[in-house]
Length: 158
Image 1 (cartoon, rainbow, N blue to C red):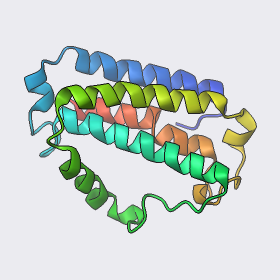
Image 2: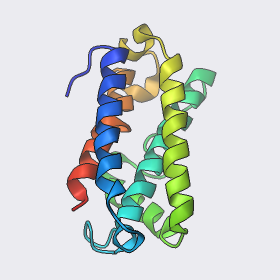
Image 3: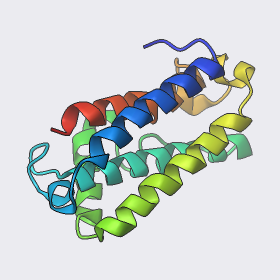
């Protein structure tokens, strides 16, 4: 979905996150931790994955604001290696307690919303402000790590 303003981004982010929260609200801990929701991934893995990418985007943005070099998706990885990168982080966090993952899931969301609130529309929509955004406006990167990602997660959780 192409978003044309910060207001549209926030509206979509709140709506998609609401759908995700509703989807997981009815699950008991055993269902959240069951490996097999999405391949070997559990709902807990999916939630941790969302946190990872929210935090990754925040770090890119903050580094870009400082004028630092930003390597996406991560140093040592390119976009064709996304599956390997995601699996690396799933392995890293798979044994984290559910309570810790859920706490980070909620905290990270509040953090990314706070960052989004501070970004002017002009910065979100302009091309080329940050070299790491390539041919996409910042708003597309934000959506990819918020509303679009939440929509994906809802589809993955059965």
